[in-house]
Amino acid sequence: MWRGLWTLAAQAARGPRRLCTRRSSGAPAPGSGATIFALSSGQGRCGIAVIRTSGPSSGHALRILTAARDLPPARHASLRLLSDPRSGEPLDRALVLWFPGPRSFTGEDCVEFHVHGGPAVVSGVLQALGSVPGLRPAEAGEFTRRAFANGKLNLTEVEGLADLIHAETEAQRRQALRQLDGELGHLCCGWAETLTKALAHVEAYIDFGEDDNLEEGVLEQADMEVRALEVALGAHLRDARRGQRLRSGAHVVVTGPPNAGKSSLVNLLSRKPVSIVSPEPGTTRDVLETPVDLAGFPVLLSDTAGLREGVGLVEQEGVRRARERLEQADLILAMLDASDLASPSSCNFLATVVASVGAQSPSDSSQRLLLVLNKSDLLSPKGPGPRPDLPPHLLLSCLTGEGLDGLLEALRKELAAVCGDPSTGSPLLTRARHQHHLQGCLDALGHYKQSKDLALAAEALRVARGHLTQLTGGGGTEEILDIIFRDFCVGK
Ligand SMILES: Nc1nc2c(ncn2[C@@H]2O[C@H](COP(=O)(O)OP(=O)(O)OP(=O)(O)O)[C@@H](O)[C@H]2O)c(=O)[nH]1
Ligand SMILES: [K+]
Ligand SMILES: [Mg+2]
Image (cartoon, rainbow, N blue to C red; front, side, top):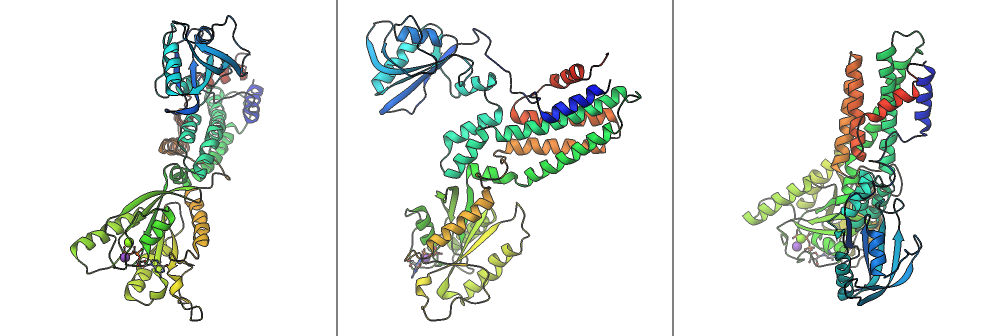
C-alpha cells in the first residue's frame, strides 16, 4: 500500500505535474463574457497605434471590419483594408493579426489592429468596433485580468508585467522581466510542492499510522523537509526589503556640515538645478527630494540642511528635518569639505554621524554610508592629503567634476547591495504582499514544529502552503485530496 506514498513523494520531487497550478488551465469556457476592445498603445498622434480585442466575438469583428468571409492565417501579419461596417467607409489600410485562443495573451480569441496612429483613424476604428454586436470597451487592466483568469499568468507574473510597464530604470526592467518570466512564482511553487509532500506524509501517518506496512521515518522525513524550507524562507525574508526598494526607489540622503557642497552634488547627480547653491552657509533649509536614475537604479535623492547647532529658528527646524530624513535613508552620502577637515563642524560630523553609521553591524536594516570629501580642487597638489585617520572615503570636486566617475561606480556598488542586483541571484520579493505571505508561511511552519498533535501539525502545514499559493494567486485544497486518492492507491 505504501509504495503509493513513495511513488507520490518521488513524483513530487521530480515534478511531473504542476502541484501549484495557475488559476485554471486551457481555453476559456466558450461564449464566456463579452468581447472587449481598447487602444493598447499610448494616446496621441504617433506612427502606429495598436488596437486589440479579446473574447469570443473577436473573429467576427475582424471579419466585419475587413469585409472578408475568411479569417487571415493565425499569428501572421496581414495587410487589410478596414472599413466602417455601418457606412462601408474606408478607415485605414492596416496590419491585422489573428490569435485564436487559447494561444493568445489572454487565452481567448484575440485580434490586433496595427493602424496608422492619427487620432481620427484610431477613433474611427474604435467606433467601428463598438458598433459590432457583443463588443464593448475594455476596463483598465481587463486584458491582464482575463489572462490571469484563464491561467496564462499567475499573480506574481501579473505583478511583474505591471512593473515592467512602469519600469523607468534598467535595474527595474530586469527585475520586472524576471518576475514576469515566472521566477518568483516557480520558487513559490517549488516550496508549495515540498509542503504538499510533507503534508501527504503527515496525513498518511494520521490515517494509517498503525499500519505495519507504513514505511519508517515518514514523520522524520516531513520534519526534515520543513526544516530545509524554513532555512530557504528565512534567507529570502532577510533580503525582503531589497526588491521593494528596487521597485519604488532607494532613499539616498546627502548630509554634512554647512557649505560642504551638498546641494552642488545633488544638482550634479540629478543634472538639474534642484537646489540653490551659494557661498553662504545655511542655504538649504527644507528637505529637497528628486527622483534620479543612478547607475541604472531608481533613487529618491534628498538634499538636506547642513548640520550645525546654535543657529536661528528656521535653520534649526531645517537641521531637525535633515536628521529626521537621515534616519529613513537606505544610503547616506556623507559630505565634507576636503579643505576644511579640521574645523569643529567637520570633526563633530565625523564623530557623530559617520562614526555611528560605521558602528552598526551589517544587516538588511542597517544603513550604508559613503564618505565623500568634496572640493578636492582646493587641496594643494603637493601638500599633505586629507587626514590619515579618516575612514574610507572618495575625493570629489563638484566644481571640476574630478572624481565623479569614481563616485558613480561606488554608488552603483552600494545601490546593488541596497536594492539587490536583478541580473544575478535569486528572485527578489518586490512587494509587501510577498513578504507578508512568506512570513505567514514561516510562522505556520513554527506552529507545525510546536504542535504535539498531528492533526494540528497537518493544519499548520496547510496554512503554510495556503500562504504560498496565495502568493501566486492559486488556492484550494483539492490538489492534496487528488494526490492522496490517485497516488496512494488507498483501498487497493
Ligand atoms: N572650489 C570648490 N567649491 C565648491 C565645490 N563644490 C561646491 N563649491 C562651492 O561651495 C559653496 C557651497 O556649496 P553648496 O552646494 O551650497 O553647499 P551646501 O553643502 O549645500 O551648503 P548648505 O546648504 O548651506 O549647507 C558654493 O559657493 C559652491 O560653489 C567644489 O568642488 N570646489
Ligand atoms: K551654501
Ligand atoms: Mg545646500
